[in-house]
Image (cartoon, rainbow, N blue to C red; front, side, top):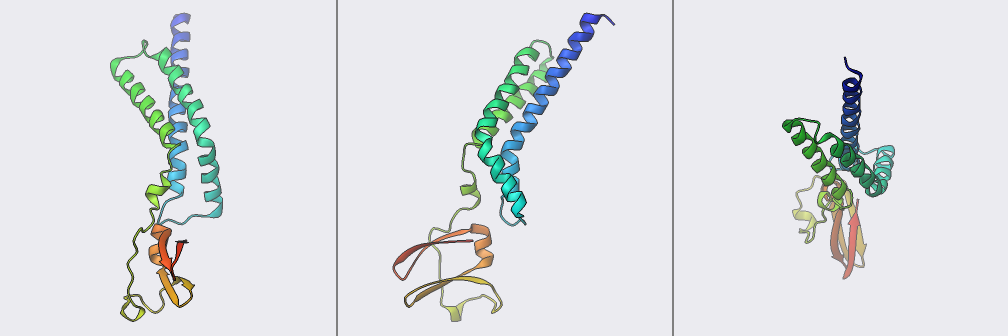
Length: 169
């Protein structure tokens, strides 16, 4: 094989691998925290610490990775066929979306508080007697929040004994 063609193919392959790694890293910065910190799933302290560390570093690293994605695309664009250009464009779009989402507080979408909680008297409650609850009491006013509901919403905004409270789990 002609040495120039062989070195050109190696360069193209190296750029394609760099591009693929950049796309994977960009998606990781967004998806890792989102998948680790989500409702209805066991969350170990180690996994949460990892997710929060990634989440804190994601804004700066997503910009670096976005640049690392665009640079190979610039060099590859004229060397590849039309369908590979479509893949390059899709990869750049994925990295751009990941870079934007790493700056958005999407946890508020996942753990939205109950804005106007509904209550009923304890004797009319459909809770089992063994149901675990979180209790808040101010003066003679008391509320019980089922752990089952709190595990999903994580936050309830309420007023107990004329005192605004945010009950969290």
